[in-house]
Amino acid sequence: MSERIRVMLGAEPQKPAVISPEAREWHAMKRVNKEDFLAMKEHARQHGVVSHKWRNRRWAVLLFCNLLFTFSFWLDIQLLEGALTASRFAGFHLIDLNSALQVMLAHKHIIVNLFIGTATVFFLWVLLGGRSFCSWVCPYHLVAEWFEWLHLKLVDKKLVSDHQFHRGARTLFWLLFSALALVTGYTLFETLSPTGILSRALIYGPSLALGWVLLLLMFEVFYSRRAWCRYVCPIGLTYGMVGTLSPVRVMYRLEHCFHEGDCKKVCLVPHVLDMVVKGRAEHTEVPVGPDCTRCGLCVDVCPSGALQFDVKGLSRML
Amino acid sequence: MSELPERSDDEELQPPPGAQRPKAPVRKEAARRRFIRTAALACGVVGVSLAGWIPVASAQKTRLRPPGALEEHDFLSSCIKCGQCVQVCPVAAIKLGDLDEGFGIGVPYIDARNQACDFSCDAVQCILACPTGALTYKKPEFAQKRAGMKLSRDPVLKAKAKDAEPTLNLKERIGVARLAHPEACLAVQGKGFKGQARGANFKGTMRYMEVDRWKPVPVRDHPYERAVCDLCVSECPIQDAIKLEEFTGADGSKRHRPVVLEQCVGCGVCEMICPVEPAAIVVDERQEWKA
Ligand code: SF4
Ligand code: SF4
Ligand code: SF4
Ligand code: SF4
Image (tube, rainbow over all chains, first blue to last red; front, side):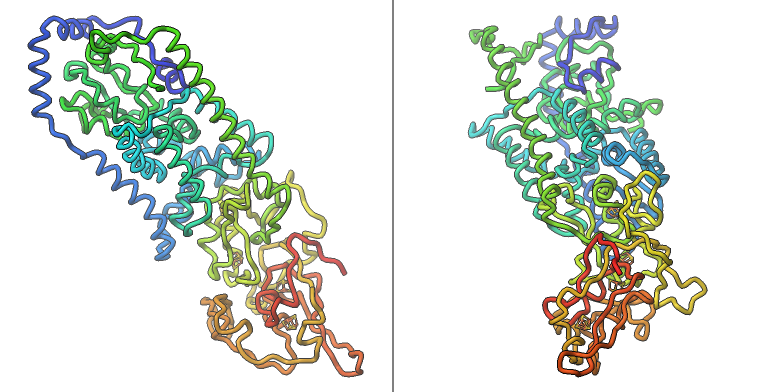
């Protein structure tokens, strides 16, 4: 686990030092019968169904959550009041963990409701997977996903290329924004957060701040793929840390994998899928690390079902 | 250009035979470029976030904050920018700041001339809604306090004057009214007022007890007819906050002038209702009351 946390904070994934005997056997098998292996792989590929099951479910959930805020306010049904940064669901306080952190550091005074809301959300996301907040709730994730499609089209046409940054930058931003909140007493990150800006725009109407969000999207389209989520956003890291405790994750099963690497191509955080590289898996089943947003794109794309959602203790429930 | 070669032993991911793996200096160069890019990104993002300080420092926008707001710096640091206060206000007096307010983005304010807080919620609902204590009935010990912010008596809400508990829970003012343009004031000129206070296109609403106890109605649907204009005095929701005082004009005629009293909480209803353009009476946000 500590290795996975290191990778989340920005370290390059390392080859495992020890590989279990069973996993070793599988790795060997895949090397020995190359012909058979390729035939099986071809077979799996032809029978693999390209599905968008998880993506569609996820988009539906994301839109539902965000529009519930909007309609609660517009239609005055008072079911979910507030915005993503802080809200009340049927009277229960819910407070975004990263916003709560920023306010607590800046204001240095925690009232009961703030504490209750933060604790509730903390336990909620421990249960639901941590960074699943990113892909299942965050409105910026969705628009960035749509613009990413444009970026990939342009890369395909060789009109732009993806400029990568060091992933450790996000850890640095997390520390910097925390320190700045503590020292200046202003919640600096909230000024920039496209998550907050989009959520408020959906509820309270458009704002100038949407220009900043558009700028970020353009940066991602023309310069660096998913740059905000990959290299900057401290919200992702906050929820990632919560997710280290979570039972919900994606599970990798070595025996089903043909190592074509489609999963790494669709993944927002491909460093968590290092075990799919041939010879890397240290066990026959490897859970994907906490930086995974549980978006399910890899689950959808894998032609042989090697990646599946899994709940610790309730294995193969999904 | 930035694709670092995969350090993998997977045949499929390796360069085809013939093609050579990039040589070490190339990879080093790529790593160096990535480092510079990352440093630039870090400076860029932090720089942009610090730019939010400019509007705050130059105080281009001094805003009237909702009732119970902490002092400006504490308010900006404690508000989580959720808008729950916006959602509960029956007259939609509260708006959220935009990007041009820097750190004030997403932070609530009241533009009293367009829509003042008339306390038609009775219980200062916005304070009840606030999850972080940015709006609060009672200031915490450590919070900085402004002289003259505390009211000497609990304000009595005219609408509740006959109730068992007629006061607002609020003990502090958010600003204070001031007759900014006495020469423009109709009462000072000895004039009356007839018609829609702010014209036919004004969107503001207000609670009129005689119309509906719980439902604010548009101001334009409630025309006035006064021999001497006293709208600011009659529509002020707080008891003993403002009165009309008689005086003798230069020409010896009987004139009146609105006088703001110590119970003024700074809600801004007087500024909203004042029929002259621009308003003769305005609210100075976060100001203390002076005799
Ligand atoms: S106190 Fe004023 S601003 Fe607050 S909810 Fe009531 S009417 Fe609106
Ligand atoms: S309810 Fe409180 S935290 Fe939320 S926007 Fe209003 S003042 Fe800020
Ligand atoms: S005098 Fe004006 S600002 Fe003061 S309480 Fe009355 S209406 Fe509000
Ligand atoms: S409402 Fe305006 S014009 Fe009328 S008395 Fe008050 S300040 Fe003067």
